[in-house]
Length: 163
Image (cartoon, rainbow, N blue to C red; front, side, top):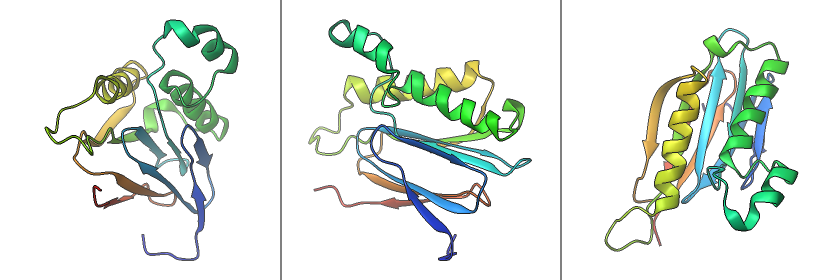
């Protein structure tokens, strides 16, 4: 993972990135969730940053459907898979890892409904899409910075100090 010659691509809140080029995809997670996907056959990798699962909230239902914003898990995961498939990936070859939903700044270490919902949604979506989950680090007490090496699929995690 220490290859400093690789391009760094920062995935912002609600964003995603997919590539078949050598790079490091990275994002910073607090209460949000990220899924990394890697196809070791086609050497395609992707990462997203999900804010909300995509359940239909009454107050933003029309806006959510109109925008198909990738901050919602339902659209983010669909876009991630679609973009990987555009590079020739087959779903049966993809391996996934799930990170985030931090419970930071909660003195009682309790989980908020949105964090739990994000994790449950991602797990259910990947299961229905028949994508194998090989690692999961979620509902931890500190924020995470994650780095996905698109050459190997390896993910480096940095646990940040919880202020």
